[in-house]
Length: 548
Image (cartoon, rainbow, N blue to C red; front, side, top):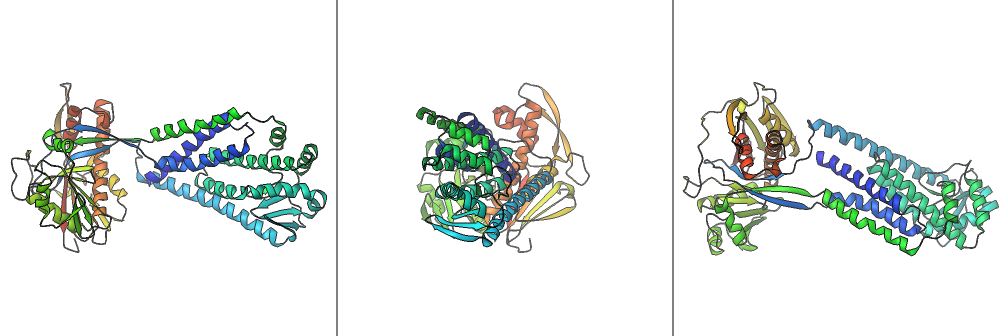
């Protein structure tokens, strides 16, 4: 939900900036077709550019954490650059509902206007057939307008000024202005809260009239006679907001544009302002991802040779695009030069079952290939198959045997991919929504109000790189994640990513508190302090029990 609302906010900002530059640099120019193209391009680019995200990676090296049998702990983390987060997910839900209501209201308004046009035309009489469509005359007193291939005017207008009016409206039809209006109304429905979008729509309607006026004058109609007709039709009759109407737009602007001297060809070059604005938008939406790597012994293999990639497709296994069997995976890795210090990447299709991924990881563990990544992003250390080897530096094990219920958060993925979350004596059925896990984990780990139903804390001493020390209340919370072997591995990864992101947001808050900067700007020594204060305590298990 948050990502959805944030996207539309970015669209609104891009529209406002592009429109501002158009208004300053091009709106007074007489190249109407060019201006029309610029406004349509502005609308399209505004929706597309926020989706074009450039990712900048910043590596930072730390020592790996240990793992214990039957438990996988994250050993290296992708720390996403943090944006301001809402304190509750409800605010994002409310914003989404408000957005949806506004969008539906605008679309209903547009739909009603279109229906009204067709109802009106149903009461009118066709008087002439044109190559572009038809002319219909109504008894009702209305302002002349066109809608796609239909030109609609009153009987009085048909008798008094029919030729000039039809010339004007045929220009709208020939230039496909109705399609522009339909597209712009859709944009306004999606950006109903953005004044810049409505101003852009208004200016495009004015440009439509400038183009039609220009064609009328080029057809040989007297400028004075035509301007007097515009003045006469500027007031009094009913008009339709969605149609191309003769009296649409500001009369003063239209007459001024008719009398204005043609713009120089050099002024067309101003349209190049779009290029730096596009680059600026891409830069503004760029994301910095700090990849906190394992130490040199683990990562040196990445720089020396290609990382072996295991790809899972259906029930088939591929190593560097070469099909291999599960039993032959170890030998294939050895043949491609992999060693126990090699980082092996695992990628998979969306519908891969967790059972297959577990089988692959079991083979890697038995062969002492313990360092893996998922989709070349989240790095992990697998637990050794039997006992810890000398290749893995093992830290002191967690000093407890029985964990109090208050210290446990349970996340369960059923075989139908539905998710259940339990902590603090409550249970939530999340369906397929992994996003709600993020706030749940943050609430569970932080325990801001020191609730007796949420994890206990213990006081630890943090030694800062400056030599100073401070006390910190470390959470004793443990997240236990159980996944059915029949569940899709993609759901498993999304849940894990939500957990990691929650921890990373908590770490970012602490980084700003201790060092006055976001976590992606910390040094390796400062990161060590943050990771000591907020370790990721996550236990994962795969079960064949359908009831979990």
